[in-house]
Image 1 (cartoon, rainbow, N blue to C red):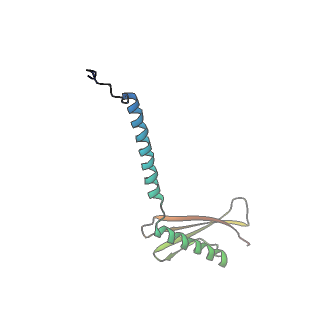
Image 2: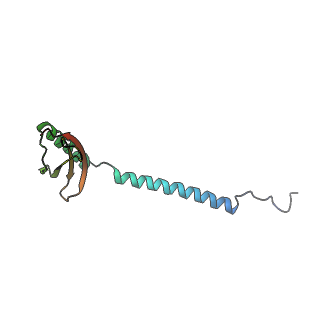
Image 3: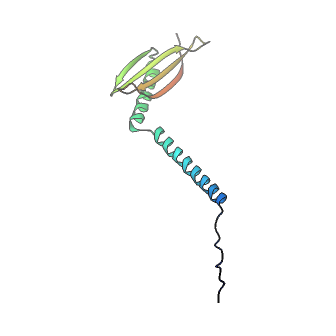
Length: 118
């Protein structure tokens, strides 16, 4: 005949279970933060197109030496060029390019330093 009291089942203690849950929750929390952060910074086709237009605008500025502050409307975007003297150097200019959509949301920025050659 077998024993009257069955063998004890082996199980985790309460502190071990709590530690395991904390570890699992922290892993899920970290994964969620990474996934939501990635979704916010993803490049949309609109941002890619805006960046490409901004690079073309900057290249045209350098080629034609159009070192004046102005803006232009291209394909539903507004491109801005802000020219200012570089502090401490008369022969250098800082050019800040940026592009915005119809809602005036800034999509891309770019700065460059050029020689003014008065």
